[in-house]
Amino acid sequence: MGKRELTVLRGVSLNIERGELVAIMGPSGSGKSTMLNLIGCLDRPTSGSYYLDDREVSHLNSGELAEIRGKKIGFVFQTFNLLPRLSAVANVELGMRYAGGGNHRRALEALERVGLAERANHRPTELSGGEMQRVAIARALVKNPPLILADEPTGNLDSRSGEEIISILTSLHAEQDVTLVMITHDANIAHHCQRIIHLKDGEVVEEERV
Amino acid sequence: MKKWFEPIATAWVGIATHKLRSFLTILGIVIGVAAVISLMSIGKGATADILSRIGNLGSDLVTIYPGASTFGGVRSAAGSVQNLTQEDAAAIAAQVANIDYVAPTYSTRLQLVVGGENMNSQVTGVPPEYQEIQNLKMTTGTFFSDYEYQRGAKVVILGSSVKETLFGEANPIGQQIRMGGNIVRVTGVLESKGAMWGSPDEAILIPLTAMQQMVAQPRTAQGERVISSIALTVSDEEKAEQVVEEITSLLRTRHRLGPNVDDDFRIISMQEIAEAVTEATGTMTLLLGAIAAISLLVGGIGVMNIMLVSVLERTREIGIRKALGAKEHDIWIQFLIEAAFLTLAGGIVGVIIGWLVSYFVDRMEVMSTVVTADIVVLAVSVSVGIGLFFGFYPAWSASRLDPIEALRSE
Image (tube, rainbow over all chains, first blue to last red; front, side):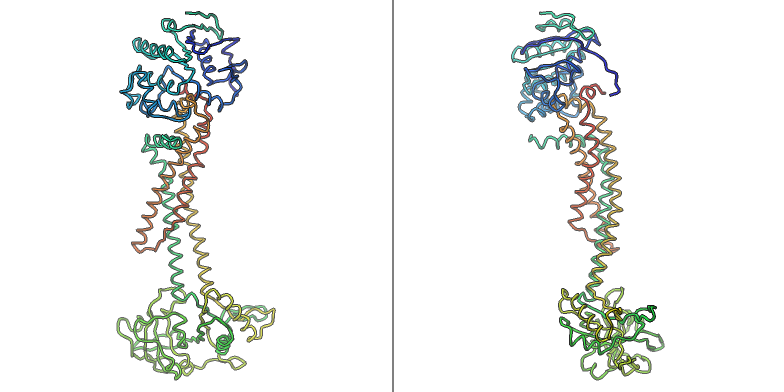
């Protein structure tokens, strides 16, 4: 497509079990985000294969990938990525919109689980960073996906809010049978996980069990 | 929320967020639709006007005029031959079916003197049936009777404009007019039918029998009395065409025209004129509509422009939606509905404004206007169609965005 092809990940072989809590660490440019995009079915590998729930998904078209994202994957971003024009509860409802349809009651329940029920009708601009990230987590979990991916969920937060977010994520993992993969720079946060994968220059250099 | 409702609600949020921009975007559509509605209504109003005037003259009216003579390949002006006769009229009355009344008329220019006024005018000799045929109503006095006709009474009926010219506001009934070398008495004034071709407002009518006493009526080689026209009414408008055909063949026989000779007379039926007028004004209306439709097209381009800006501005939103599982067609439909929504709103506002314009044009009696349901439905559906057409590309380009790049955009 006129763009220079850049090999970001090379010879990576990785297996994540259902219900695992995994952290991916590495310096910038190590291929963490590309890895997460691949796992999240936002991108397709140029070569190699990826099995999600025993299904080879690396050759699926964009519509089929969108279907998988809608049904099986919840995303939590560093920059929250809430729609500024919608209230907190409407943002959470949006998480179900492409996974079979929105439901106001379930959206409120999800907000309750992240402890934000009373701010349901506030817009993102009226919320703090930590609150926005909690709305984003509610949006990710509202459709009960088996897999939640978080890309530096605490990167834009102060340490106290960051800890709150991590405790919400880990308790979510503990209470439900959800697989959680998280990119982080923070070794303290990574040590809340069961396994830490270290990436460097597109290769897995170390796997560490906590 | 119901599933079908969600994209509409989303589109509404998109529009409501940028109220001024949305308003400016639809302005082109508003103006276009308003122009289409008001111009079409004026065109339709004009058509209805003309048709009602024709109806006033009598939509069952058929008039026969003498035709052009062809001599050595040179065709003279219509009416240049004197070949239509009173005997033709009698033959038509006797032999052609589905005719109510037949009236031969003879017109000639005569010198009129009223008081000090002296003028040269066209005077028409007619039988009493002429009143029925031309659907003439009186403002004052009466039309001449069969009895007056039989004895060739020197009475005259004036058209409304003629009465105005000769007598002004004064009552003309019983007044005398010098006509040629004779004195005639005014017995009636006709109601006005509005100025147009064939209007009786300019008519000066006297009994044909009186006319024949006053002037020497020319005769053909066969000795038949030459007349200026034959007016008749058909009993059934549906049969007008058949009547015209029968008269044509009768007159061709009577005038001894060979199979390769053109008719030496012309038959004009109001039915035919009405059709011709309807066709002509219909074309005009369509033309006006087409000119107005160009502004709709320009409005559509404006919508496309804003939709492209909107897609660019909301790239990140599109990325988020895609990450949440939106498929290409979800995004596509969202933007398409937004565009159609905008132009639908523009169409509705345009209909209201166009309707108001034509209402006031009608109220101020500039022109009569008719807003018909079909124009309204057409204008609104065309504006939605414009939204879908010009929204197509922006919506498509939105749907094709790569989710990763879209999420990265600021």
